[in-house]
Length: 217
Length: 217
Image (cartoon, each protein chain N blue to C red):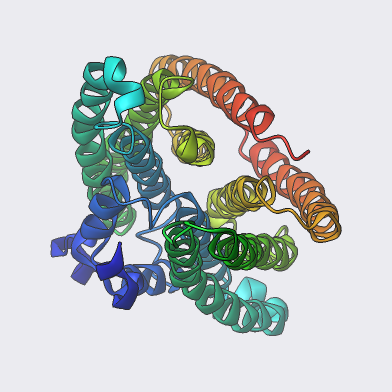
């Protein structure tokens, strides 16, 4: 785990990253996976817009599509960064767990440090939820406004972003379970559950619209 | 598109692959993304098993966990290969669409070649659905049998595999829409809808069990 602290995962080859994910190293794990799946969703949303730009039939949508690409570029970068941040935050919790607890002072200090690292570790997947919901709202603008050849890609984008939100939620939750500060727990739970509900509803609506367009005769 | 034919996408750095996915190149697209998200799901399932192997408390589950890792290794490789296969199949359809249609003979020949490439292109995401469902059945064995510290990773694995199945389904469907051979269409649709239903049910069951274990007091 120590060795993975200074590596940028987004520079790993896909095959290597998947192997590392599968290994007994606990990080990168589900939290990093959530951010990666979110970035895949954002990338597909950009592809749909890019496949629409320059098409005569959608000339009047060109500005909208360019705006989508521009906003997505930022989100994509942020979600890729969250792969690293999630692993860093996880490693800090793991380090805190290794602190000595031989006397009451050490126990108290360890408890305090652990609490703070758990809070940090819950905020990273919360950020993945926020960014993925933002991406869904941007994706919504492609419905009916983009190259119909890429309609299935809109659906896949929605599915990835939904999965990212739900996956990140599980990672918020597993950290909240161990945090003692009940005000913090209640506030983050409230925010996360609201993002979860809005994200699932929006993603399902986009998926269903895509599914209904693709009619097998 | 021509240039991407000889590149192995799994050797791309994650950041580069995401950029390529976002670009105006139609492949890699949603089909490749489905296979990649499936491989992320399988990798997390292996991580859960690997984090259980060697733990005294789960000594009696060691054989089961080793079996899970072994089966997943095969599935992970197959799903990563399907990233390439999906793009190859897509490129063949794109090439068929570029064939000349200046006279009835050319039109007939083009129609026939296009039909065959579309059939091939529908079978790749069908394979992604099969492999991801297989992975969910393997993942199910980790529930209650594995290191509880990794319970959220079981949930993320289930979410990724569900998303892979649904994403691949949209890619089966968009190809079936254009295929003329109704017997083929009906048979593949029947298979895919059955995989979709079974996959969603199993993934939802696993996710709900994980969610209920993670109780915030």
